[in-house]
Image (tube, rainbow, N blue to C red; front, side, top):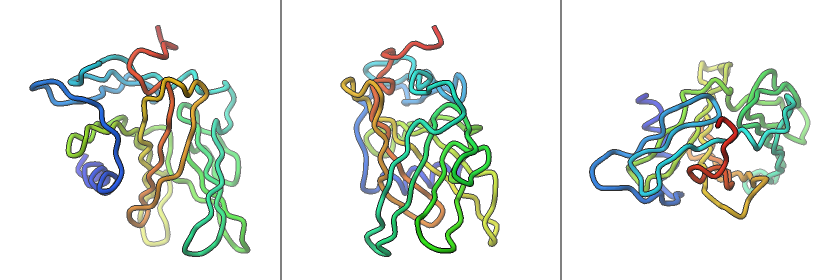
Length: 189
Protein backbone atom coordinates (compact mmCIF):
# COMPACT_ATOMS: atom_id res chain seq x y z
CA UNK A 1 0.00 0.00 0.00
CA UNK A 2 2.97 2.36 0.45
CA UNK A 3 3.50 2.48 -3.33
CA UNK A 4 -0.10 3.59 -3.83
CA UNK A 5 0.21 6.30 -1.16
CA UNK A 6 3.15 7.78 -3.08
CA UNK A 7 1.24 7.49 -6.35
CA UNK A 8 -1.78 9.26 -4.86
CA UNK A 9 0.47 12.07 -3.70
CA UNK A 10 1.96 12.36 -7.20
CA UNK A 11 -1.46 12.32 -8.85
CA UNK A 12 -2.98 14.97 -6.63
CA UNK A 13 -0.15 17.47 -6.50
CA UNK A 14 -1.93 19.46 -9.20
CA UNK A 15 -5.25 17.75 -9.90
CA UNK A 16 -8.16 16.91 -7.65
CA UNK A 17 -11.91 17.23 -7.11
CA UNK A 18 -13.48 17.25 -3.67
CA UNK A 19 -15.56 14.63 -1.90
CA UNK A 20 -16.73 16.43 1.26
CA UNK A 21 -15.74 14.49 4.37
CA UNK A 22 -17.55 14.13 7.67
CA UNK A 23 -16.26 14.73 11.17
CA UNK A 24 -13.90 12.03 12.42
CA UNK A 25 -14.13 8.93 10.24
CA UNK A 26 -11.35 8.74 7.68
CA UNK A 27 -12.81 8.62 4.14
CA UNK A 28 -12.42 5.22 2.48
CA UNK A 29 -13.98 3.11 -0.24
CA UNK A 30 -14.04 -0.57 0.74
CA UNK A 31 -13.73 -2.80 -2.30
CA UNK A 32 -16.80 -4.95 -3.08
CA UNK A 33 -15.33 -6.29 -6.31
CA UNK A 34 -13.01 -4.97 -9.04
CA UNK A 35 -15.72 -2.61 -10.22
CA UNK A 36 -17.41 -1.33 -7.07
CA UNK A 37 -16.75 -0.14 -3.53
CA UNK A 38 -18.61 1.23 -0.51
CA UNK A 39 -17.69 4.87 0.18
CA UNK A 40 -17.71 5.91 3.86
CA UNK A 41 -16.50 8.84 5.94
CA UNK A 42 -17.96 11.44 3.55
CA UNK A 43 -21.10 13.60 3.57
CA UNK A 44 -22.88 11.29 1.11
CA UNK A 45 -21.75 7.68 1.72
CA UNK A 46 -22.89 4.81 -0.47
CA UNK A 47 -21.92 2.33 -3.15
CA UNK A 48 -19.80 3.43 -6.12
CA UNK A 49 -20.63 0.94 -8.87
CA UNK A 50 -19.13 1.13 -12.38
CA UNK A 51 -20.68 -2.10 -13.77
CA UNK A 52 -23.30 -0.33 -15.89
CA UNK A 53 -20.57 1.41 -17.91
CA UNK A 54 -19.63 -1.89 -19.58
CA UNK A 55 -21.32 -3.25 -22.70
CA UNK A 56 -20.83 -6.85 -21.52
CA UNK A 57 -18.13 -7.66 -24.05
CA UNK A 58 -14.42 -8.04 -23.43
CA UNK A 59 -13.54 -4.83 -25.22
CA UNK A 60 -12.68 -1.30 -24.11
CA UNK A 61 -15.55 0.89 -22.98
CA UNK A 62 -13.57 4.06 -23.71
CA UNK A 63 -10.95 4.84 -26.38
CA UNK A 64 -9.45 8.32 -26.51
CA UNK A 65 -6.68 9.85 -28.60
CA UNK A 66 -4.18 12.20 -26.98
CA UNK A 67 -1.40 14.09 -28.75
CA UNK A 68 1.77 14.60 -26.74
CA UNK A 69 2.78 18.25 -26.60
CA UNK A 70 6.44 17.31 -26.09
CA UNK A 71 6.83 14.79 -28.93
CA UNK A 72 3.85 15.71 -31.17
CA UNK A 73 3.01 11.97 -31.25
CA UNK A 74 -0.56 10.70 -30.85
CA UNK A 75 -1.41 7.90 -28.43
CA UNK A 76 -4.64 5.98 -28.00
CA UNK A 77 -5.68 5.09 -24.45
CA UNK A 78 -8.24 2.30 -24.11
CA UNK A 79 -10.04 1.58 -20.84
CA UNK A 80 -12.64 -0.79 -19.47
CA UNK A 81 -13.35 -0.26 -15.75
CA UNK A 82 -14.89 -3.71 -15.19
CA UNK A 83 -13.47 -6.23 -17.68
CA UNK A 84 -10.04 -6.97 -19.04
CA UNK A 85 -9.75 -6.92 -22.82
CA UNK A 86 -7.11 -8.15 -25.27
CA UNK A 87 -7.30 -5.63 -28.09
CA UNK A 88 -4.76 -3.22 -29.45
CA UNK A 89 -1.73 -5.39 -28.69
CA UNK A 90 -2.28 -5.50 -24.92
CA UNK A 91 -3.20 -8.97 -23.70
CA UNK A 92 -5.77 -9.22 -20.89
CA UNK A 93 -5.62 -5.65 -19.57
CA UNK A 94 -7.95 -2.85 -18.41
CA UNK A 95 -5.91 0.12 -19.63
CA UNK A 96 -3.77 0.05 -22.78
CA UNK A 97 -1.69 2.67 -24.61
CA UNK A 98 -0.90 2.41 -28.32
CA UNK A 99 0.86 4.88 -30.60
CA UNK A 100 0.81 5.89 -34.23
CA UNK A 101 4.52 6.10 -34.97
CA UNK A 102 7.05 3.58 -36.30
CA UNK A 103 8.43 1.03 -33.88
CA UNK A 104 6.05 1.86 -31.06
CA UNK A 105 4.87 -1.06 -28.95
CA UNK A 106 1.56 -1.24 -27.11
CA UNK A 107 1.84 -0.83 -23.36
CA UNK A 108 -0.29 -2.50 -20.68
CA UNK A 109 -0.96 0.34 -18.21
CA UNK A 110 -3.00 -1.66 -15.74
CA UNK A 111 -4.81 -4.88 -15.05
CA UNK A 112 -8.35 -5.19 -13.67
CA UNK A 113 -7.20 -7.27 -10.71
CA UNK A 114 -6.23 -4.10 -8.88
CA UNK A 115 -5.70 -3.33 -5.24
CA UNK A 116 -8.96 -1.47 -5.32
CA UNK A 117 -10.16 1.98 -4.54
CA UNK A 118 -8.42 4.60 -2.47
CA UNK A 119 -9.57 7.95 -1.18
CA UNK A 120 -6.78 10.50 -1.18
CA UNK A 121 -7.35 12.23 2.13
CA UNK A 122 -4.19 14.30 1.62
CA UNK A 123 -5.90 16.57 -0.88
CA UNK A 124 -9.68 17.07 -1.10
CA UNK A 125 -10.63 13.38 -0.71
CA UNK A 126 -10.33 12.44 -4.40
CA UNK A 127 -11.47 8.87 -5.13
CA UNK A 128 -9.21 6.70 -7.32
CA UNK A 129 -9.45 3.23 -8.83
CA UNK A 130 -5.93 1.81 -9.24
CA UNK A 131 -4.58 -0.59 -11.84
CA UNK A 132 -1.11 -2.15 -12.15
CA UNK A 133 0.32 -3.83 -15.25
CA UNK A 134 1.12 -7.53 -15.20
CA UNK A 135 4.38 -6.99 -17.05
CA UNK A 136 7.57 -5.17 -16.15
CA UNK A 137 9.62 -3.05 -18.50
CA UNK A 138 13.23 -3.96 -19.31
CA UNK A 139 14.35 -2.25 -16.08
CA UNK A 140 11.94 -4.19 -13.86
CA UNK A 141 9.26 -1.50 -13.36
CA UNK A 142 5.49 -2.00 -13.55
CA UNK A 143 3.14 0.61 -15.00
CA UNK A 144 0.48 1.96 -12.63
CA UNK A 145 -2.63 3.93 -13.55
CA UNK A 146 -4.87 5.89 -11.23
CA UNK A 147 -8.35 6.64 -12.57
CA UNK A 148 -9.89 9.50 -10.61
CA UNK A 149 -13.64 8.88 -10.32
CA UNK A 150 -15.56 12.14 -10.67
CA UNK A 151 -19.25 12.27 -9.69
CA UNK A 152 -21.07 13.89 -12.64
CA UNK A 153 -24.80 13.10 -12.67
CA UNK A 154 -25.15 14.40 -16.23
CA UNK A 155 -22.68 11.79 -17.58
CA UNK A 156 -24.79 8.66 -18.05
CA UNK A 157 -22.39 6.91 -20.48
CA UNK A 158 -19.27 8.37 -18.88
CA UNK A 159 -16.42 10.50 -20.18
CA UNK A 160 -12.81 9.27 -19.90
CA UNK A 161 -9.88 11.67 -20.15
CA UNK A 162 -6.11 11.58 -19.91
CA UNK A 163 -4.72 13.96 -17.29
CA UNK A 164 -0.99 13.28 -17.40
CA UNK A 165 2.01 11.23 -16.48
CA UNK A 166 3.16 12.74 -13.16
CA UNK A 167 6.20 10.43 -13.08
CA UNK A 168 7.69 7.63 -15.13
CA UNK A 169 5.38 4.60 -15.30
CA UNK A 170 2.55 6.42 -13.46
CA UNK A 171 -0.53 7.59 -15.38
CA UNK A 172 -3.42 9.76 -14.20
CA UNK A 173 -6.84 9.60 -15.86
CA UNK A 174 -10.29 10.92 -14.96
CA UNK A 175 -13.63 9.21 -15.42
CA UNK A 176 -16.63 11.55 -15.22
CA UNK A 177 -19.76 9.51 -14.59
CA UNK A 178 -22.98 9.40 -12.59
CA UNK A 179 -21.76 5.98 -11.42
CA UNK A 180 -19.08 7.72 -9.35
CA UNK A 181 -21.88 9.31 -7.31
CA UNK A 182 -22.78 7.18 -4.27
CA UNK A 183 -25.89 5.09 -4.90
CA UNK A 184 -26.61 6.41 -8.43
CA UNK A 185 -25.78 3.17 -10.26
CA UNK A 186 -27.08 0.01 -8.61
CA UNK A 187 -26.02 -2.89 -10.82
CA UNK A 188 -25.22 -5.16 -7.86
CA UNK A 189 -28.47 -4.59 -5.97
